[in-house]
Length: 138
Image 1 (tube, one colour):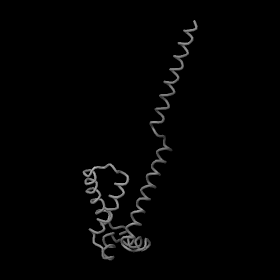
Image 2 (cartoon, helix red, strand yellow):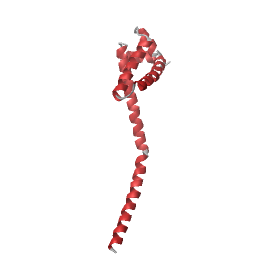
Image 3 (cartoon, one colour):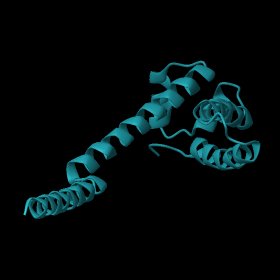
């Protein structure tokens, strides 16, 4: 009689663990709406911070104030046009921004192979070229 009680207690305990364990696993594997919104906001903030860092770096490279740079962009000038006014070539701007991205990537991915880095550099070059040729505010 005592062993039946122990077996029944264990079955109930195991059932409770399975039921509650599964429900907790399911709820934690699917983020709720608030978690998704918060994650999206964090990613957006991170992208904006990164963009500000690139702009700050580029402004320093072009030896101008951020205010002047932003005014030029709002007037419809591309980064290439702004750079040319500062006696910098398109290739110099590309090389500078590529160097910054490469350094950042190497810092966050110290074990990346040279093949991976070369693939990234190709993609970055295309993205940078498109970005600096884009006119804003026109």
